[in-house]
Amino acid sequence: AVIAGLFTGVVAARVLGGLAGQAFGWRAVFVGAAVLTAVLGLATAYILPVERRQRRGPLFAGLVAIPGLVRRSPDLWRACVRQAGMYGAWSALWTSLALLLTEGEGYGMTTAAAGLFGLFGLAASVVAPLAGGLVDRFGAAKVVRSAYALAALSVPLFWLGGQVMAALCAAAVLVHAALVASHVANQTLALTTTSAPATANTAYVVAGFAGGALASALAGPAFGHWGWGGVCAVAGAWLVLGWTATAVRPARSARSARSARSVRSAR
Image 1: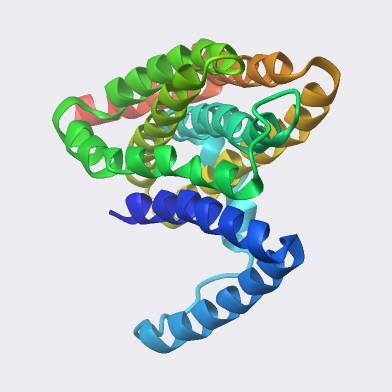
Image 2: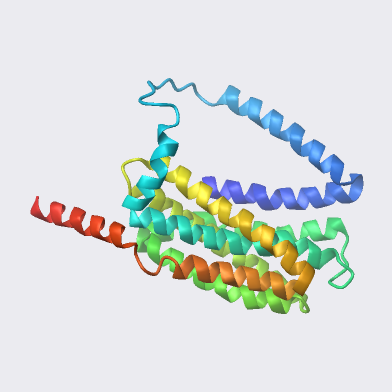
């Protein structure tokens, strides 16, 4: 439910931002975003219940513990890397899509029309509750594999979408559904495979958004040099890296996991 709300906000903001940008210019969009952020921050501070917990250890002990926690947990490491690959592929395509839609060599749409394209992603947000049920039934690993297969299918559709609008619409739904399903499954792994779920979740979120930011940074120059095909190549490369980098479990983590299983068996 939380993830459905997260990605609904992401794509709905794209729609509203496109309409506002067309009507009032991009500066008004940024000012409006700043005001909304301040209002939501104050409302959150007022509405959320007060939680007083005794702090143990240094203030930044959790941040210092992240590298060691990731090394000791192969499932957490795998979730972080695979979500970085998935989020990077989605981010490269989604952030560059406006260039394809609005440029004269592309579809030549207005800013408002390009923003409305986010409705395809909004339709895919309904996958989040379904993905949660699938994780409970079949396990997170199977859902992640299915999400990667769906994302891999969307990349050639995106490439074809540079010329065929129907393919672009289908790809937009598929890649967003893949991202949401992958996020639900990978975050489930991050929250349940260690004894420090908050620290593990921090590592997971940072890894995912770092992958997205880096892929977006590469997608812009790729579009400038090689056009839409270059963006699709960046997205495909990110998916390949996210999957192949986790195909082999780190040696230390594998030994730790085997040792933990041996201890449990002995008990």
